[in-house]
Length: 168
Image 1 (spheres, one colour):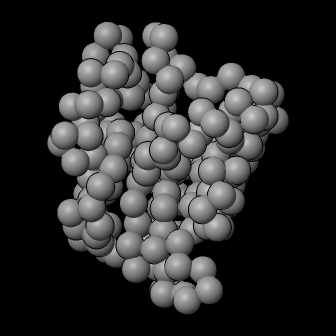
Image 2: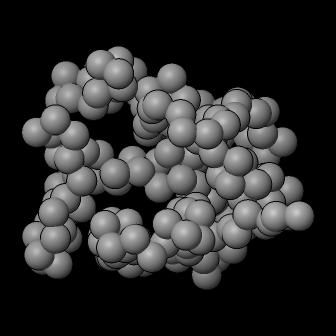
């Protein structure tokens, strides 16, 4: 489990590696499937939109990605996009909620998918994917509000995509 621990040293290393930076085929996600413990199936799949392998942490992220990857208006997809920690900490303080932490380190929050679009009015769209059952968990709601406020402060459309598991 130690290899999954997020620390300031790891954050500095990842920033030096260029994670969370670039566009199209040069983009490197902030988190990869090797960095986070899997509680289900993770996916690495080649994107038709940007020609690189994307890292998706669940079947639900994979399904949302597939829809985005085949949308005509989408020109780029960046997964596990990092949010400014200074801004998310400030937002958490203003909401009087605890910022996500791991081992005494304020975590870098990420958005599951950031889409570049062929639209002058809405050039970017941020998407967070959650199972519908998780959406009503109080702590999850707090983190989603921080993320929503982050994107609102940037004037970028933010959507939460939920899925319900189908049972026979």
